[in-house]
Image (cartoon, rainbow, N blue to C red; front, side, top):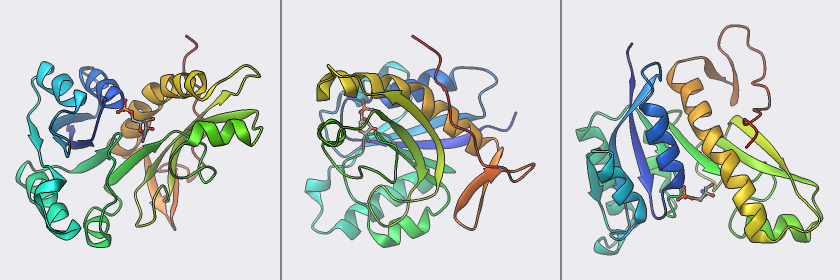
Length: 216
Ligand code: GRF
């Protein structure tokens, strides 16, 4: 099988990275992680990467005077490793438009809400404050605006009456860990493609259905 070469960008805990690492261990998975880059030297995700014997790089944004220079360093490292598809997994830097353009349609992000609702930070607090009965997570192609871009896959979870931001975050995160490997497989295998900024089944041009994570 021709596995797509994946780069992953992280800033912190790296639990989604771990879910991708685990998925890539499967022999039938259509992708392999060839490089993990953190912009934060102490990111816990770097330890997960090292434990999995995957090459890592720390590119600390604080060492760069401009966003352009930082993104150019990212780009150079990704190209050097011959990355074909890039996955943001809890990467807390906004990309420059030039970087987004260079990786256009080859660059995914995961966000802990049902986009286009609740872009940005403090998602779970805002979901609860709004009285939503359902929340979830989204994997989408990256575009220049934060948390915008064609939706590859979504999973939904209930919001319960007794939920705090922490309990809801934990329920959504569990769904994320199933959704990201699923969505990456769809893109890496070519099972879905972009048509006029919508992600459709490559064979029959149908919408990608809601993803149901396995029950805990
Ligand atoms: C996840 O909730 C992800 O959706 C968001 O940032 C968080 C990262 O968590 N973009 P982790 O680093 O993958 O554990």
